Image 1: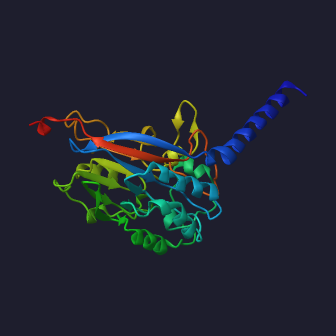
Image 2: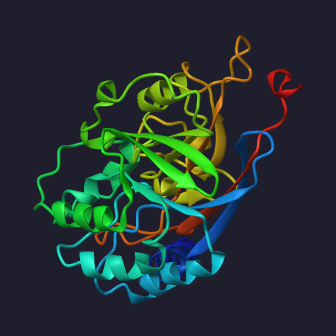
Amino acid sequence: MNTFTTGLLGLGATGAATLGYAALIERNAFTLRRFTVPVLPVGAEPVTVLHLSDLHLMPSQHRKIAWVRALARLRPDAVLNSGDNIAHPESIAPLMRAYEPFLDLPGAFVLGSNDYFAPGKRNPFNYLVGNRRPPTTPRLPTEELVERFHAAGWADLTNARGRLAVRDLDIELVGVDDPHLGYDRYEAVAGPADPNADLKVGVTHAPYTAILDRMSADGAELLIAGHTHGGQVAVPFYGALVTNCDLDTGRVKGVSRWWPGASGAPSSDAPDAAAWMHVSAGLGTSPYAPVRFACRPEATLLTLIERPRRAADRP
């Protein structure tokens, strides 16, 4: 066997091992991220928010269901759900089992494309080149999903505003339907944040920059999103290649700052005007592309603490 053939076989074996790891191990290696975000009024006690996103749940995914249920040990004060919960018409009951420990908590939700339409077979490279097409797959039981969340008392932020009472805090919420499908109607909920609220939060499934700009310009101090899967396949020591929207790859997951305008770039004119933003890499994948590489599936516990004192806060 010559050196060239040996090299090809070695590359093939490495590729097969990498694909096996991504499909069989990492996509099930669920992890909990923790971030501290300074957005509360001065003097407020910390509160914890569990951010769940992009489960893409199939009825047979018992390991994922058990892992989500076990997050109850964190005893969060509230839950925010940024969509893409299901991937099968029979996923509602298993999803409610996963969420059961949290349904009595203050919560809010928006919907993603896979809360409306079943996933379909497609070229996985379309994800890398940003090919965005209207879905043609069968509808999922969206109405039943929404009814279950309503029954739990979670605030429906589908192109809507809402309010959560969390401990002693009055949290104002604004949300949109999925911008990736073009269902967002921010003009229906646009307007300045209530100055009497203790915290203003914007929630969207897909973090498209136009929505982030409008929410933060209207006074949202914290932005919550999912959709990106953290890039789903990342390059070690480099990061994500794509975000599946127009967000830059530097904010594909985790906590960052967002200034209104100029795609969130820092503004010297208003250095304090930035919102904090958390984008979840989510817990699932499409059943037709069940891989993760250098991007573990995740849920996040956000600990909200008081913001730094500003001149206006001092007596």
